[in-house]
Length: 172
Image (cartoon, rainbow, N blue to C red; front, top):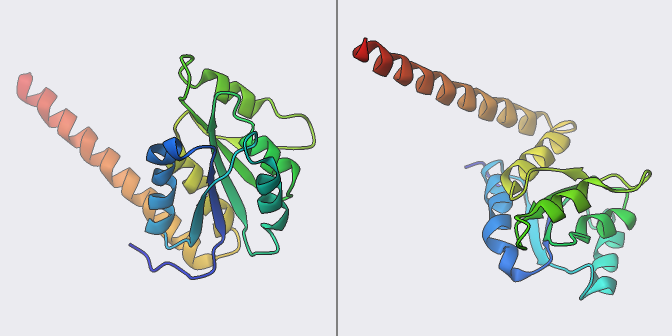
């Protein structure tokens, strides 16, 4: 694991504490890259003023990217994006009988002018990786760690291919 810098640069938000099981994957991924982050429960509907205050002050507090996970109507990412010019990445959550489709559609249908990047339903780790890629644009050491991460993915894929090829060859 990389050493975590002290300055918090990514905010991880969730609409409810019940979302923690999914959103902690973003925190774990960021920690693995040494990216300092904070995790908060803020609701677009139940705590709109606190949510707006958080988003409005985020850049001044040193944040560079915000990850927002929410299910159902999934307004959290959009509300946050409306109050900051920082990049916002939505993580639609499976919180209703619709399996997260409602949250996914709410997240990707932002009006022109207020963009929100959106990952797959439950894709908190990918949201963190997108945040890392954004931060790596201005941080050569972080960019190198991201390249190394991708090399590791390639090595795992190559090992899986080799395993399958051996298994198929033994059946021939």
